Image (cartoon, rainbow, N blue to C red; front, side):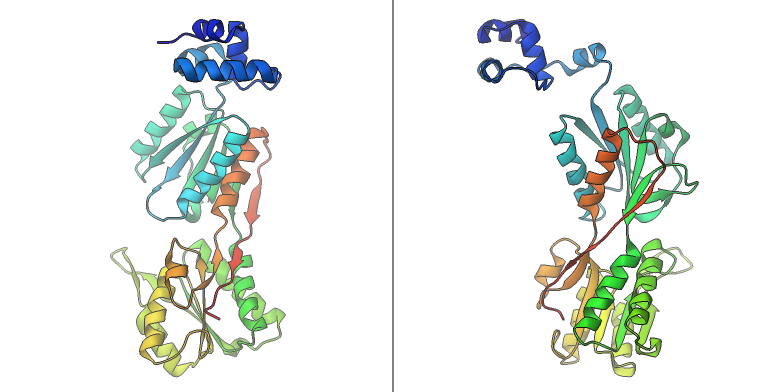
Length: 331
């Protein structure tokens, strides 16, 4: 293995200068930095992180514990947001994917303690309350896309009320007056907040609530499995309530509603407006016409959480970040 002293000799500088360059010390002169970086590339030098950790007071390592990382596409945006801030501040970021089992979470926390991480972002698959392990409280921790049951940790979450209010207001401002909202399971945080926001928009615009129909079309049955009745509900609501616009609880649901509307010979964006939430992967742009939707602020949550940790804040905040309206052609 190439040693730091060999790099120093090749570059014609002291080994302390090489160490400072490797550790991103901004006080190194540009000319010396260029010499060292050139020598590192030519010799193929790789820092010994394990040895470095034993010498450093601080590890410079942060981590994300991701709850069911691969379940939804936008979960990665939290990681991307946190990684951007880590790179800018010369921090290293570990990513651990866990499932609901306590064993999985305990093993992840044990790894973090071994690496002497300086802070942790605990990220959930969807906006919900979580019970955080006492072991994790040994490390500065902030929750992203979830909040603590006991309100004893800081968190950053999507502003579901703002999302419901803004998408409903956008429809109303375009002239839509009779609106159906096909909501998610009303037991979840997102569904409750978005419903509150839609109702708030109707009241603010002075519209009668009799022209607003809200129905939960994703429900949990006795066997604990969630099932969607969105197609059947949409067909019935279009025939009976005759809305001039439909708000869908999430983009995959909107995709189903597109089929229902097309089957009835209606033109989306002309005969009826369609709006949704989440900006889920490629769905909004694959649908024709492209779907207008409220984008979840996962990227912003990742950035905000990482900035909170690096700033060494200790205040217990419950930060809400707004969704972004992505206007396309569905209304």
